[in-house]
Image 1: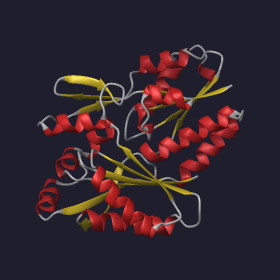
Image 2: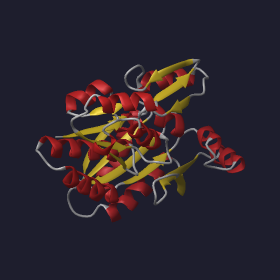
Image 3: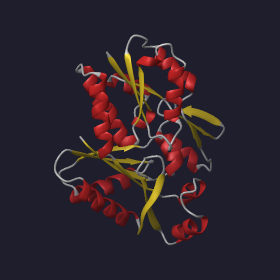
Image 4: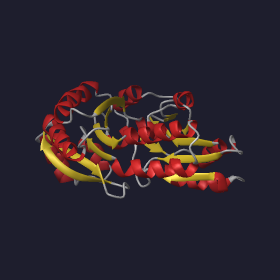
Length: 278
């Protein structure tokens, strides 16, 4: 039997994941002197509320011991851990290190999905479905590799201070950008390990339209799934949905709250737009 494991980049809590047929190791956020497991102990909305009180968060990957303990629950199964993108977090490294602690490490496979959030969620859901249908480990990993190649992500932040802190923009550019209400658009590098500047537009609507045009060139034909995820910015997400549906009418759309850990990187009110082929 193949059992699927992952982490909360999938936007599933540990309980939600169990109900869906897989397991996740939660990432954590620390804010206002307290540490929380994301989704299990703090929601995205609660997290953003604390940020607005003037607190700056930090985040951390699942502890190696916790991941190893998760592996040890299934000593007789083939385990496939589909991790969020290496480089954007040390979650992949923790998953690999935990494997080395287990007696049955030869039956544990760890994959760097090179993506996160929406596409990561879909990849894990698909892998779980295939495992339930009796697919082999190779069949599942081959399909995961195929899906990974189709994923594309864009981030439209609202608060430039988070980009300054993360080194995504120079202080001068970010201060000027905030003053004139520019909307930067970030995307993952080809290896998925970092975020890089893709474009700058004047305002959120123009930024979403630009992303929609880029995706419309990529998402041709049927079978594309587009995720709109947000940091307590439901209204912005719904505005983006209207704009994107007009540009890519054949796609399937989903809206989800972003994980607290990703909000730590992108900042409150950020919106991510991500695509993957089904």
